[in-house]
Length: 257
Image (tube, rainbow, N blue to C red; front, side, top):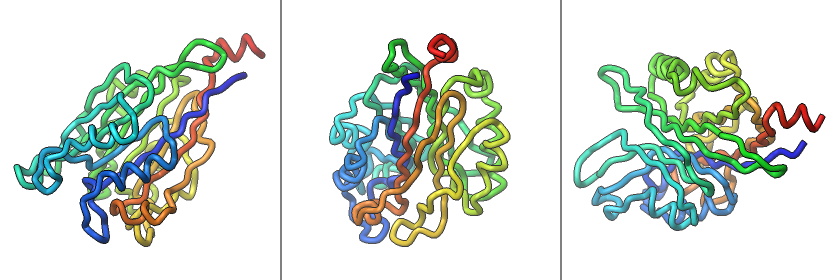
């Protein structure tokens, strides 16, 4: 049974501004990501157009620096010409076959969403598999986060996916108490590593705000965090590095067995 290994980096890049030195440096962010040689990159707080950020469109600056030509990006928060706007982005080494944004915003709260993209993966023994990627950034209150995650799970885009189809949910959960995934994602069939790596604040991580969960024919073989000096200074979060093992389709496994 020949499976496919997929490396994923999930990171709130804080608009490419260092958490301690407050220096805007997208090349520093790209260098941290590049050292892990990922196949997929799920980013939160990716900015564009603001004078504070040299009017860069960061999804393209980072994608070009990493040589990842397949990209999806959606803006959640808009400030104005000085601070620009920001949202979630997905970068991939293989084509994104579909991409859409799912709104998780609650009344009276800051705009939040989950960016959903599908990647068609070529399997080592022939054929292909679809990997569904959900890149999220949840709210600041526990009640808000629970409601947003329930909303995501109820979306037809996720609820109607076959139980064996590989699914990845990752991003900034703002999970201050470290219980959100266990309470809501695990009962829905998702798996992760516990305890989750601490990712915030980057210079001295004490909270596991970020997470990676998988479902279906997808195994999370390792989950760690960036430990380099650059990783601790490039943002206010530390990146998560996840290794996935995507299994061939059930009929192929049965035939080989």
